[in-house]
Length: 115
Image 1 (tube, rainbow, N blue to C red):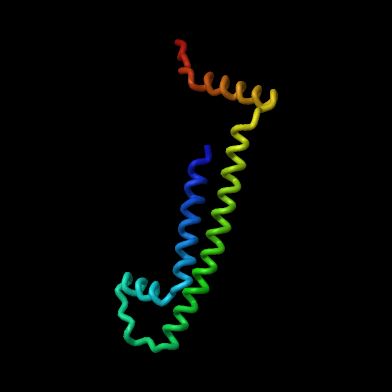
Image 2: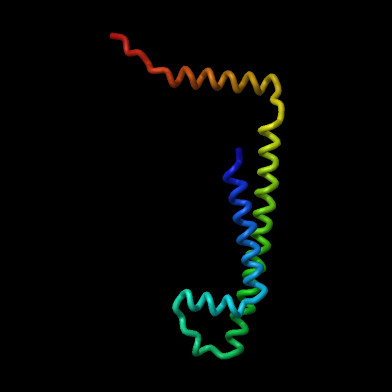
């Protein structure tokens, strides 16, 4: 089952909404980011701070859109793979599966060394 893809889609969805939250209020998150990096923001004037916040907003909106698209794509492929697993297999597919299982059994048998 495609559990890893489903988990990645859910994580991408939560991270995308976090990016949207950052884009809505960039001044708080800019200060949080600078505190995290240990940078004192005493030299920048109001225009420079505003430019940084606008850049952060644009980047976060772009990240939101990309992660949301990734999450929706992952959800689509997860549903598709689950439907494929639950689908009734044709006779030809069942024969291929049984043949591959027999081949795996033969490969796993220990080989006799005759002397």
